[in-house]
Image 1 (cartoon, rainbow, N blue to C red):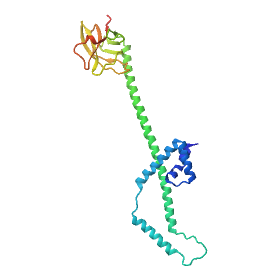
Image 2 (image 1 turned 135 degrees about the vertical axis):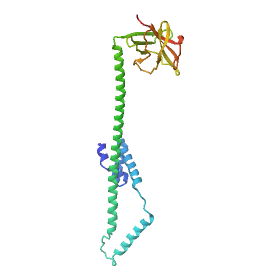
Image 3 (image 1 turned 180 degrees about the horizontal axis):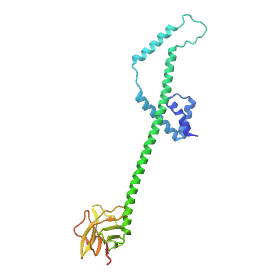
Image 4 (image 1 turned 45 degrees about the vertical axis):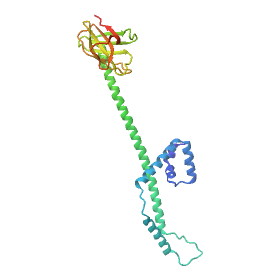
Length: 269
């Protein structure tokens, strides 16, 4: 069964308008039960007819309808033969033919307009879907482009021979935690890579400290997101003997909470 060819045959439009034969009607109902795509198309056609009728229908005034029937009765009385014969003549009124032809043309025009409207609506839906897909692809491209730029910057930091690595291992508070400091001894830039740290609770945030001449100095707050393995730029330092991370209130503290220290690492001389 070629559902597409059946849909494009126009039989569904005839069914929706109630002008198909009883055999065609039974066939449409049977195929709708078997093929969801035909049932969906029929529902769209019926909806299109309702929308079209709503847009273009206009109820004539009762007086106009009555005047038309009065005119037809007068014409029939005027053209009726005065003597009846046994020969049965085609006593058809030319005005009735005109009205019937007009109604037929109107019905055909209505079917044609409905088919065009339905196909236009289907094509318009496809255009909208394509535009949405195009926008999604553009967003994905921008996202991947940003990720690539971040990766290139990180690779440049890691490949710089002036960068000194400081491994910060987990302490008693969290033995499995780990982070890496990348310290450019020439530009004094400090970057951190979180390798393994528990996600902080709401209202709390990790803070990096640089140990300078035996005193902890704030090196910046760390914003963590799940799955983020990129480098985070911290505060610059000319000198430091070690680095450590503690868990503080959101926004940081003036001095580290030693009981909440997670990792620490000494700078190699």
